[in-house]
Length: 147
Image 1 (cartoon, rainbow, N blue to C red):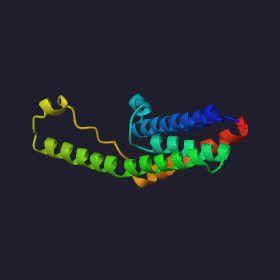
Image 2: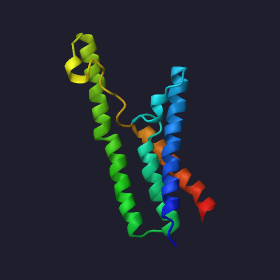
Image 3: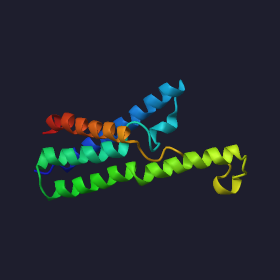
Image 4: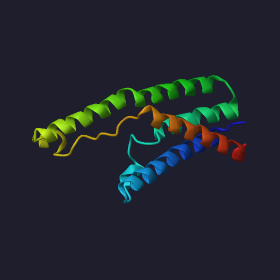
């Protein structure tokens, strides 16, 4: 039997849940609604990790260990590693560059239209960990409902 729709649904629910949690936590911290958090990258939990983990876990639950699971697992590992590696380092660089330009009162209008560089690009390991937990949870909760 083909469970493609269920796998996609579980994955999208994990992504949406992560973004909603991100919105709630950022809004709580800022004491006002921060709607851009609904579509932002970076932060707690990692929506990328939640999405790919839900996909991989759903494939495992519906199909077992097969070629699709192996491909999904490899893609998930790359996405998760990238979010904690290159994207996290880019976030750190943006933070430092924003501090330097502010401290030196540099005119950066031609670089980023006068706006600071976007800092939350990657994830710290704890953010990825909770994204992975959320993804597994969504797959486990969705499985008995659609099986």
